[in-house]
Length: 498
Ligand code: AHR
Image 1: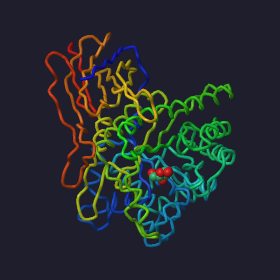
Image 2: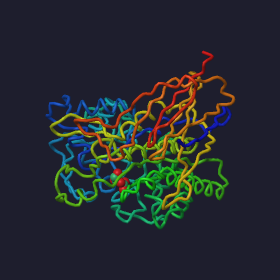
Image 3: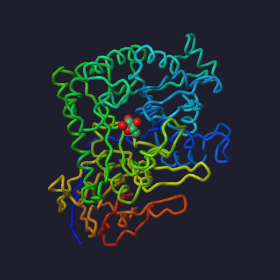
Image 4: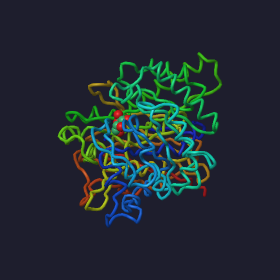
């Protein structure tokens, strides 16, 4: 048994968790849209073609916001192809994923689906093959009430009320040479500045995300952020971060250190934003939108065998195991600990494509292993993120000399006088006894202990079996707390004064 200690104090506060930390992402990629959220004529779908079983699982996750329509896809997307009568919409080659896009599902359908799912839209615009003119037209189509060409066109398509989209991504991964219409930092910074200026002129309350680096291993990481922000600082609100984590080997001890890698990435981007703030003597703070994060590697070899130029092929269909659930849980802990600066985070993606939800065309939807840490964090992780002081033994791996076995984040629900702790035991063999010092909280007791037992690291879920799912443990009467090896835990402490 290893021993660890956590100290919490009511005054050690990081900041309020923005509910958009539990957002997700849907791209026109593989089967995310077609046979994912949308399958016209299926017995699983409603009259509009939306998969009802998928919708129920999306609602279960209580996702506040979904980024759409890409991803790499957006950088070659002509949004006008996806509106109006479906029979008039063109089929197009999608050069991001070497597939054919039918446009049977488009902007109008997405907005109707989003209303049913109770999610807000985070709309990404094409700054790859297109520019300010097309972005301006899209803004007018989506948000202007009436009396102009594009707002009247929207009304003629059946949506008299504007969509009122508040959150916009100014392109996607524009630093990446793989991106259609890839630009250098100067060219992108200028385009983001000019597009941002125009959007804010229309409505200063719009929130805009400029592209940061596609991952921290990009050769331009750091200088890209600084250059883009020096141009666009006054006209954007957030800078994006993207990162996917993989378990090559597998090397589980290394994989389980992913939270440290994410933490360093976030700290570096915060530092760069604040460096530009200093250069500009600005009072404004740029916050972070971690709008693509997840584990992604299982499907790489299967994807290499997909026939090009097919419609909605099964791309990026990672089947996640228990180790992936632990890592996703650990990444959520890191995000919650940065709630003061990371305001938006999108688990990439939502259905079928590197996703917590899978839907077979002829079978019902099911929950992957990673569904559960995301669900539990989304349900219990809204409140004030508290700063834990963690005292834990550590192990070494090929990347880091000291990986603490214990990591945790905590969220204080002030009105309910409840402190929810999310804790991972990274030890693959030892139980962990945790001593909690709650100082000025006063008398709190553990009211509920939910956990994911991931000790069988290679266990997966399927349509038939949910091997990884939340379990509950009776809190010990003497207040002692033991975490299982390779477990991710939700500990709900309540005041006993009530
Ligand atoms: O989410 C899959 C892809 O990963 C996205 O299209 C792209 O933005 C990123 O590289």
